[in-house]
Length: 162
Image 1 (cartoon, rainbow, N blue to C red):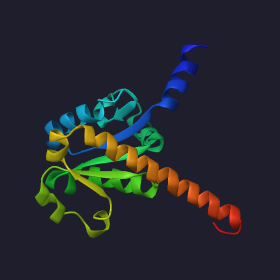
Image 2 (cartoon, one colour; image 1 turned 90 degrees about the vertical axis):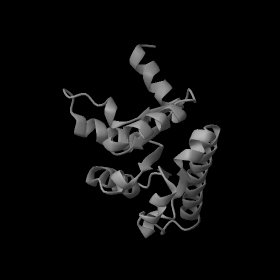
Image 3 (cartoon, one colour; image 1 turned 180 degrees about the horizontal axis):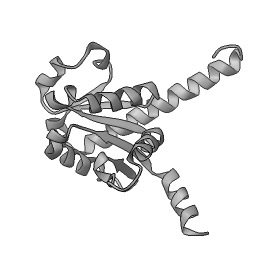
Protein backbone atom coordinates (compact mmCIF):
# COMPACT_ATOMS: atom_id res chain seq x y z
CA UNK A 1 0.00 0.00 0.00
CA UNK A 2 1.49 3.33 -0.97
CA UNK A 3 1.32 6.48 1.14
CA UNK A 4 -1.55 8.10 -0.76
CA UNK A 5 -3.79 5.08 -0.26
CA UNK A 6 -2.97 5.03 3.46
CA UNK A 7 -3.69 8.76 3.70
CA UNK A 8 -7.04 8.19 1.99
CA UNK A 9 -7.92 5.41 4.41
CA UNK A 10 -6.88 7.52 7.41
CA UNK A 11 -8.93 10.46 6.12
CA UNK A 12 -12.04 8.25 6.03
CA UNK A 13 -11.55 7.42 9.72
CA UNK A 14 -11.16 11.05 10.77
CA UNK A 15 -13.98 13.41 11.59
CA UNK A 16 -13.48 16.53 9.52
CA UNK A 17 -14.37 19.76 11.30
CA UNK A 18 -14.43 23.07 9.46
CA UNK A 19 -13.82 25.96 11.89
CA UNK A 20 -14.83 29.41 10.68
CA UNK A 21 -14.20 32.68 12.50
CA UNK A 22 -13.35 36.35 12.07
CA UNK A 23 -9.65 37.19 12.05
CA UNK A 24 -10.42 39.65 14.84
CA UNK A 25 -11.27 36.63 17.03
CA UNK A 26 -7.99 34.73 16.50
CA UNK A 27 -7.36 34.28 20.22
CA UNK A 28 -10.75 32.62 20.75
CA UNK A 29 -10.29 30.61 17.56
CA UNK A 30 -6.91 29.24 18.64
CA UNK A 31 -8.36 28.14 22.00
CA UNK A 32 -11.36 26.55 20.28
CA UNK A 33 -9.03 24.81 17.83
CA UNK A 34 -7.10 23.33 20.78
CA UNK A 35 -10.36 22.11 22.33
CA UNK A 36 -11.44 20.52 19.05
CA UNK A 37 -8.02 18.95 18.49
CA UNK A 38 -7.98 17.07 21.81
CA UNK A 39 -9.37 14.02 20.03
CA UNK A 40 -6.88 12.35 17.75
CA UNK A 41 -9.55 11.51 15.16
CA UNK A 42 -10.75 15.11 14.69
CA UNK A 43 -9.15 16.86 11.77
CA UNK A 44 -9.77 20.59 12.14
CA UNK A 45 -9.52 22.88 9.13
CA UNK A 46 -9.18 26.65 9.41
CA UNK A 47 -8.31 29.19 6.75
CA UNK A 48 -4.96 29.63 8.49
CA UNK A 49 -3.98 26.30 6.92
CA UNK A 50 -4.20 27.85 3.46
CA UNK A 51 -0.93 28.97 1.89
CA UNK A 52 -0.52 31.94 -0.39
CA UNK A 53 0.83 29.89 -3.29
CA UNK A 54 -1.97 27.35 -3.51
CA UNK A 55 -5.35 27.57 -5.18
CA UNK A 56 -7.04 28.61 -1.93
CA UNK A 57 -10.53 28.90 -3.39
CA UNK A 58 -10.51 25.27 -4.53
CA UNK A 59 -8.95 24.12 -1.24
CA UNK A 60 -11.58 26.03 0.76
CA UNK A 61 -14.38 24.56 -1.35
CA UNK A 62 -12.95 21.03 -1.04
CA UNK A 63 -12.63 21.35 2.74
CA UNK A 64 -16.18 22.64 3.03
CA UNK A 65 -17.50 19.75 0.94
CA UNK A 66 -15.41 17.24 2.91
CA UNK A 67 -16.27 18.45 6.41
CA UNK A 68 -18.54 16.37 8.60
CA UNK A 69 -19.36 19.27 10.91
CA UNK A 70 -19.16 23.02 10.46
CA UNK A 71 -18.27 24.98 13.60
CA UNK A 72 -18.52 28.74 13.50
CA UNK A 73 -17.19 31.03 16.21
CA UNK A 74 -19.76 33.80 16.47
CA UNK A 75 -18.94 37.20 17.87
CA UNK A 76 -19.95 40.73 16.99
CA UNK A 77 -16.96 40.68 14.64
CA UNK A 78 -18.00 37.53 12.77
CA UNK A 79 -21.65 38.60 12.56
CA UNK A 80 -20.41 41.66 10.65
CA UNK A 81 -17.99 39.71 8.48
CA UNK A 82 -19.25 39.03 4.98
CA UNK A 83 -16.68 36.23 4.67
CA UNK A 84 -17.80 34.31 7.79
CA UNK A 85 -21.47 34.70 6.89
CA UNK A 86 -20.82 33.58 3.29
CA UNK A 87 -19.04 30.41 4.40
CA UNK A 88 -21.77 29.78 6.99
CA UNK A 89 -24.38 30.16 4.24
CA UNK A 90 -22.47 27.71 2.04
CA UNK A 91 -22.35 25.16 4.89
CA UNK A 92 -26.09 25.62 5.43
CA UNK A 93 -26.78 25.20 1.69
CA UNK A 94 -24.71 21.99 1.68
CA UNK A 95 -26.82 20.73 4.60
CA UNK A 96 -23.78 20.40 6.84
CA UNK A 97 -24.41 20.02 10.57
CA UNK A 98 -23.62 23.40 12.10
CA UNK A 99 -22.58 24.25 15.64
CA UNK A 100 -22.49 27.87 16.76
CA UNK A 101 -19.95 28.76 19.43
CA UNK A 102 -20.69 32.22 20.78
CA UNK A 103 -17.91 34.28 22.34
CA UNK A 104 -20.22 36.05 24.80
CA UNK A 105 -23.78 35.41 25.86
CA UNK A 106 -24.87 38.84 24.54
CA UNK A 107 -23.97 37.72 21.00
CA UNK A 108 -27.07 35.54 20.99
CA UNK A 109 -29.15 38.72 20.81
CA UNK A 110 -27.40 39.64 17.55
CA UNK A 111 -27.87 36.25 15.88
CA UNK A 112 -30.46 36.28 13.08
CA UNK A 113 -33.65 34.39 13.96
CA UNK A 114 -33.05 31.59 11.43
CA UNK A 115 -29.73 30.74 13.15
CA UNK A 116 -31.22 30.55 16.64
CA UNK A 117 -32.52 27.03 15.96
CA UNK A 118 -28.98 25.74 15.45
CA UNK A 119 -27.03 24.02 18.24
CA UNK A 120 -25.38 26.85 20.19
CA UNK A 121 -22.83 26.74 22.99
CA UNK A 122 -21.04 29.53 24.82
CA UNK A 123 -17.26 29.60 24.50
CA UNK A 124 -16.77 30.23 28.22
CA UNK A 125 -18.62 26.95 28.94
CA UNK A 126 -16.41 25.00 26.54
CA UNK A 127 -13.30 26.55 27.99
CA UNK A 128 -14.35 25.36 31.48
CA UNK A 129 -15.60 21.97 30.21
CA UNK A 130 -13.63 21.08 27.04
CA UNK A 131 -14.83 17.46 27.21
CA UNK A 132 -18.34 18.71 26.42
CA UNK A 133 -17.30 19.63 22.88
CA UNK A 134 -16.78 15.96 22.13
CA UNK A 135 -20.30 15.19 23.37
CA UNK A 136 -21.77 18.02 21.29
CA UNK A 137 -19.96 16.89 18.14
CA UNK A 138 -20.91 13.24 18.70
CA UNK A 139 -24.57 14.11 19.28
CA UNK A 140 -24.61 16.35 16.21
CA UNK A 141 -23.08 13.62 14.02
CA UNK A 142 -25.53 11.06 15.38
CA UNK A 143 -28.48 13.35 14.55
CA UNK A 144 -27.13 13.79 11.03
CA UNK A 145 -26.87 10.02 10.57
CA UNK A 146 -30.41 9.54 11.89
CA UNK A 147 -31.76 12.18 9.50
CA UNK A 148 -29.99 10.51 6.60
CA UNK A 149 -31.31 7.10 7.65
CA UNK A 150 -34.86 8.42 7.98
CA UNK A 151 -34.63 10.08 4.58
CA UNK A 152 -33.44 6.81 3.06
CA UNK A 153 -36.22 4.82 4.75
CA UNK A 154 -38.90 7.25 3.58
CA UNK A 155 -37.61 7.07 0.04
CA UNK A 156 -37.65 3.26 0.20
CA UNK A 157 -41.33 3.31 1.19
CA UNK A 158 -42.31 5.72 -1.53
CA UNK A 159 -39.82 5.89 -4.39
CA UNK A 160 -41.63 8.91 -5.84
CA UNK A 161 -40.62 11.11 -2.91
CA UNK A 162 -37.62 13.29 -3.52
